[in-house]
Length: 258
Image 1 (cartoon, rainbow, N blue to C red):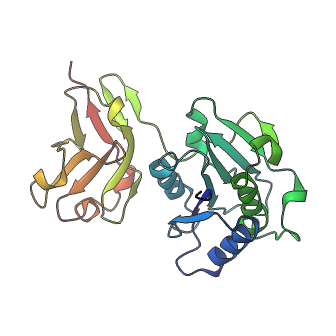
Image 2 (image 1 turned 30 degrees about the vertical axis):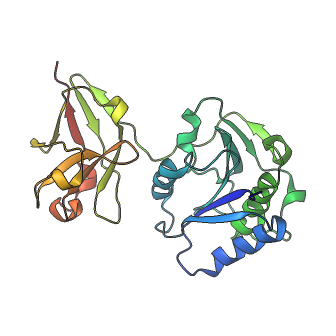
């Protein structure tokens, strides 16, 4: 029988000894666990990038999986350590907005991690990932429930994934982040995209394509990526390379056609 899955997302960087320390704690507690590296290349302190990583991966793992997320610029401060259960998956990390999108999931539950006997001692003021989050993630992977590891909370901090805003016949869609290909990501899902709508950036209409290969080269276009969210792209190129330097301050405009 395969062991439990613990998926890791951090901003520690490739080859970091911090990643090795997380894995050492996890393997020491749950040696049969399958440790999956989602990413250790989140930009330092970028809660937004961690949210986008979770958006793409959170629920694609099987039920029972544990996501350990350590992007924690507020480590050692009054921000809470928390764990969340959503659709049968567990999420462990800081209450700094990285799990904000999970609050919209049905039947989601959260706890504050206040059972210090589960922590690795002594607890470092600068590495809660190793001393608090990893031990709790291991306990959840080993079969404990959310109530076993903490005290219920009603809510947790909202994140940085700005929702598109409807204004009359238009929806304003903020540009959030560029991926490794230079595609610019948004938070508008295809389910919320109105039929026959048109997309504009600075009053220039963008064509919508279903696949990258159908788009003309060297032309900024719109399409819905594999996770269903609208993005900007350039075939065989980079959307970032053709956008103005202040691209992140200019939202897309989706014009609703009646």
